[in-house]
Length: 165
Image (cartoon, rainbow, N blue to C red; front, side, top):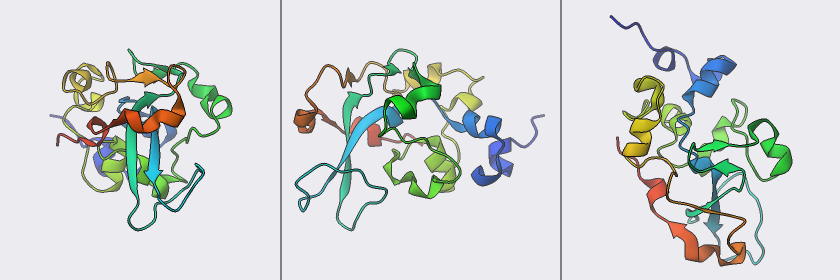
């Protein structure tokens, strides 16, 4: 008989570093370029919140550091130095999770929705179920080195906001 799983008994804020890292499902949707549609701004800018009426748009443009087959960063420990706009999700900035897709396991737990059925922790620590049901970026992206980011509107994608369960 299986005991209580740590993600069911421990809040995100109280998880050890190892437990915290284990919550990441490895989908790599956090590596997608996103933008907020804001008619009042003429220049792109970073933000840590959305305003009333603003909507986050996901693109299928992915950070060039991402290995799109394994869905893992090739420079994980150095990513925020190499890509300054890369946000490292931590217990301290968890309240700023608005930019993560609805299927993100951190967001799901934060919102009280539990882990999705395809999560590696529920599938012998394998990503294969996640890839099979289409919840990762595998096979759906183009590198930001291969596109003109000024043309990002041509790359808006709806699949990142899908959540199966």
